[in-house]
Amino acid sequence: MVYDHRICASLIACHGREGKRCSSSSTPALIRINTLATFQLGGPLPSMRGLRAFAVGPDGNLYVVNAYKGNSLIFQFGSAASLPAAYQTTFVDSTYLSHPFDLVFGSDGTLYVSNQDNNEVTTFQGPSAKNPGAYIGVFVTLKSSDTLRGIATDGTYWYLADETGGKKSKGAVLIYDSSGNPQSQHIDVHDPVHLVYDGQRYLYIGCGSSNDVQVFDTTNLSSSPSSIFGTSGASPAINATAGIALPGDGHIYVASRKGQQVLQYPLTSPTSAGTGAVLFDQLPDQPEFIGVLGQGYFG
Image 1 (cartoon, rainbow, N blue to C red):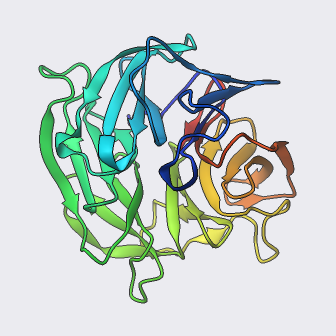
Image 2 (tube, helix red, strand yellow):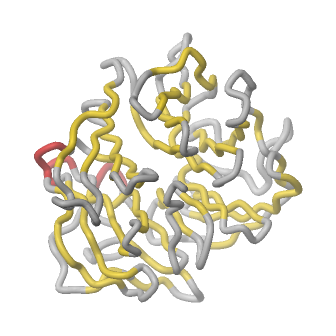
């Protein structure tokens, strides 16, 4: 199986505007939402700036991307089942990272990281390997004209969000096999940023400036994606689609980055969402990656 980013709290990573620190505090901006926002990384803590993706590794520990250009790192924290998670170590140093965006553990425990400044997906040994965090190599390198963002895998293929890919350079999700070989098919979708695979069949694509979430059937690579909101658009409206969470409760949760909200929509089917509601409003900063309490898939 593919490790599914399971996490045991509702977490939101606030990257900050243009890489600045989260406006609410100089404290690292990984927060848990219940009725209040509380910071969920335990100290003593390293210097942090520009937090982005987070994932639960095959060892049950929490891994967090520190994406600031001058200090690109992957941090390892303690058990995600017991928050706040205490800082353990720098799992991956800056040597082979270049402004990282997303991270995913593959089925063998290998860590894959997308780097937006050099358009590379780099790989590192997982936590149970002989040399945890050690550099393995480059899995995929995109063209200099591409804009790499989120990554996901269904266990057979890897999916890479390219904001400026495709025939018209308006965006595409590129598809690669497990050896990093490009497939002839790609998913035409405008401005893809975040990717979440549901563990069964469907890939959900957060389309940033389109304020939309598209869904793609991974069992048919020749198929076309469609909006989960149909032709009428999301209600309530999204203002710059960011992170997506699928906790298995019959809803999809979407981070509205510029709106500083997390929105909740009922899934009437895996490919269709109904009228939703604002779940969290007036967040302390612009949310990017989100994860929902207890179960599910997110990115």
